[in-house]
Every structure is written in structure tokens, then in C-alpha cells.
Image: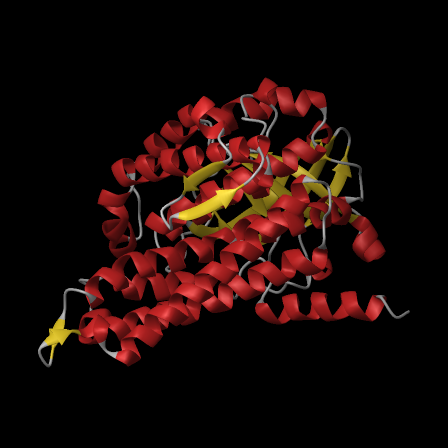
Length: 406
């Protein structure tokens, strides 16, 4: 690291020149090395399959890929080292998620469901016995994780969920359904929210750890989605499914607390998905504009196309910096529901627009499936819907300002 302790260092593909203190340079160096490592890994292990994953809506070597990610320590970025995690922060987590999304947003979504929605919730709320039992295999990639909150008639309105959990001896019996569950068909370990006291509304919800193969638990056929194809999503079915009392995650009837304490971080980490998609659009559109010719010159030299490039670049850059700033704040213990909602709102809507601009840059080629621009658009749209819709995110931000004047 001696060369990095110089006062000035040229850093990153954009060629920024930083004048910083040595400690800050070391942090930047690590982030850069992390990004480069994930880039190389994804180019070798994922990029050759990305188009086929989308077209066939499946990733046959997913289990193998999961174990390869486990070997790199990517499945537990924020998990403690003693459980096989890497013990890093949320900035590192979003960098990893961004780079996977740059190659395949679908597989990155599955990665986010595993590493944040499942693993990070276990880190924050599981007791020692639960961590010892479940964390090691989630870290190595032997097991796939998921979180099940949404239902057919309970998406953002979580409190209206119908899945019940009735106590019988030392077990809870679950009955009902969950819907739109990312990794549902593949998951070995799931965090499932159910009503243990239906009359208590938000104060009667509990989180449970459910294992694949438990009697009474099954999955329906995976959903045929517009985008994020290959990130398997399905309905979960619970028919007199017996869950041991020891599998309660967090306190009884405090599931909403468990849920909400992780929801801001879920939005933060998933916001890196749209950033990765925007980078992928630029990766394909900018070179194309400097190869394709019309009227005797490269089309990238026309002012209107220069404007497109400028718009895409500035949208990406502003989103990335917003994302990194919020992640750094969370690493320092400053959690803001307003900004976690704001960053995924801003990144998601900009990603959809950047994908549309990318299609326009490629013209007719942008509209055929021989090029990946259509995939980028379909994948980007998910982030305006999942993890709370854009409308809900605006409501959260608005309410945060309302609360300042009570």
C-alpha cells in the first residue's frame, strides 16, 4: 500500500485526481480493489450467460455460481467474520451489488435478496443458536436465502397480511400464502412474517425462520415476469406448516420492528441495482454511438446524441454519488428513512429513463432482442415497484418532512 500513501493518486476509470489524506486513500484503494475483483469475477462467471438467463428465464448454474460467490466472501458482506462473512460496511455492499447488476440485474436481485433481505436480517436479529445453525451455509453459498413479506393482497400494506401462525405446544402452525417472493423456488432458508395475534394488527406480527422441506411448506410454479428473468420468483404456500418455537426471529409479536429496522437498509442496498443498470446502458450505448455512422460521420458527433450521452452520464453520476453518500452515512450509524427511500426512488426512476435513452441511441437495434437494451429497460422497471413502490417512497419522504413540523 506504500504507493497509495502519496498525497495524490489517480483513481478509477473516470480518471479523477484526488488530493486526500493517506487513510482516506487506503479506503478508496480498498473500494477500488473490491470493485475490480467483482468486475472480473462477473465478467468471467456471469457475463457469458446473461442474455441466455433473460431469454430462458433460468440460470442452470445458479447453485455453482452461489458457491463461487461464497468463496469470494460476497454472500455476507455485512456479516461478522466469525460466521464466514467479511465484516464490511454498506458502502462495500452496494459496490458489490452494483457491479453484479452491471452484468445481470436479475442475478443481482437474487443476490440482494440473499445477502441483505435474509443474511443481514439474521445478523441483526437472530440469537446465537440461530446464527450458529444458519449463517455458515448461507455464507458459503451451500444455502440460498430469501425473505417473505408480501402477499397477494398485502404488498406495501404489510399489516393487512393474512398468513397466520397459531401456537400449538412448542410449535407454531402457519397457514396462508406469500406472493412475489424473490428466490422463493430456490431458497433453503427463508425469513417469513406471519400474524401471531390477528387482533393486534401491527403489534401481532412475528418473524419466523422457515426451512425448505418443512412439512406443510411448498412453492407454486415460478412467475413469468416482464423483467428480472432468471431471478426466480414464486408464491409460497403454508398448509398446517409446523415451525418450532425456537425459529422465531426476534421477539414474539415484534415482527414489524424486525421488518422496519431492515427495510431502510433493504432500500439502500437495492438502490445499487438501478445504478448498475445505468452503467450497463452506458457501457453499450457510448461505444455504439462512436461506431455507427450516418450522414458521413459517427452518430455520437451529432449534437442531439451528445445531449443523450450527457444526460445519461449525469443521471448515473448523480445517482451513484447519492447512493454512496447514504451508504457512508449508514456505515457511520446515521440511518435516515427519508434518504433510504429517496435514493432508491431517485435511482430507480433515473434508471428507467436512462434505459429508454439507451434504446433511442441505438435506434432500431435498440428495439430488437439481439441487443441488451430491452433487457435493461425491463429490469430497471422492477425497481419502481419492488421494495416499496415509487409512490410509497414519496409518501415516506413527505411524512418525514411533516413530522418535522409537528
